[in-house]
Amino acid sequence: MKDEIDQRQMRTIRYDYVDGTPDLAFGGLFLLMTIIYAILAAFPGLSNSTFSSIIIWAVFGGGGFLIGWLPQRLKERVTYARTGYVAYRRQGRPIKPWARWTIRIGVPILVIVLLALMFLNRQKFPAQSQDVNYLNPGLLGIMFSGILAMIGWKIALPRYYLIAAITLLTSIVLLFSGPGGNPGLAMLCGAMSLVLFASGGITLWRYLRRNPLPAESPDEH
Amino acid sequence: MSTDLRSLAGVDRLIHEPSRTVILAILAAVESADFLYLQRETGLTKGNLSVHLSKLEQAGFVNIEKTYRGKVPLTLCRLTNEGRKAFDAYRKQLEQFVENTKE
Image (cartoon, rainbow over all chains, first blue to last red; front, side):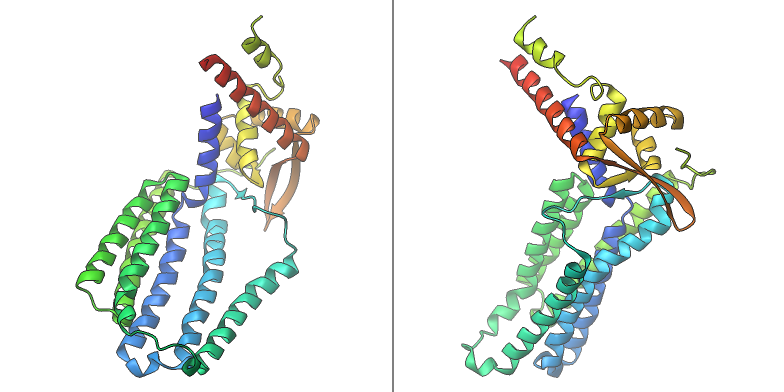
């Protein structure tokens, strides 16, 4: 009985990932990053401008919003009518809506302002080694693969192990023989975006095949 | 009666029914879940699920809210604080029983 309780609870937690919408949202975020890094790689002059830093952090901020918003809209249209609605508990103390929005808008603005200030006053900081940039794509990829493997372990979904393995492989290739800096980052983000879109697309397709819309109204309690 | 069996005899009978245990286990993992989700996960008929939910609601373990999402009616079920405490206690009793039987 105890094992069954654990299994049921794990299934419920995993339900958030069952339709592939988080993969599609993350795939969209990595696609945005690919475009940004590809532009920066194509126009090297842009890389050293404050504008590029602001754009990159705006993409991260906007991407964070996209990850929260897009899966929810997709689930409202696709998932809830087929297999039901679940709202997940937020850990920690409850936070009021105005405070949540202040954090959502305030933190990205603060980060952008701080980065802009740091960039404008970069002469005051110790010289940065250009060699580190060469390692960035590989190291970042290894970090991403670690995060993906952790998600896979936490929710016991094997597809995330596969995505983590592909990301790790791409990172190792980039670390040893790929281009560094922005071209490498564009390649890494592009590969991750492709894998996540493929994973999300296949998962969503399988979910839709297995769960057709109920013929009648399901809610007659 | 041995201590092991006595510890099991003390469990909440309302919770210690397979269908209701599953309902509470699901609701304990989330903020709320709708009737359709619970029906699919438990494999119960609408009527049976309705009866079990009513019993849990009468005991004050579950709160049932009838609402709308757009034009679609939605029955949202969530565990009350009392229900969460009762389920946690039940779970601890089960764990204790399993531990005792291992020794």
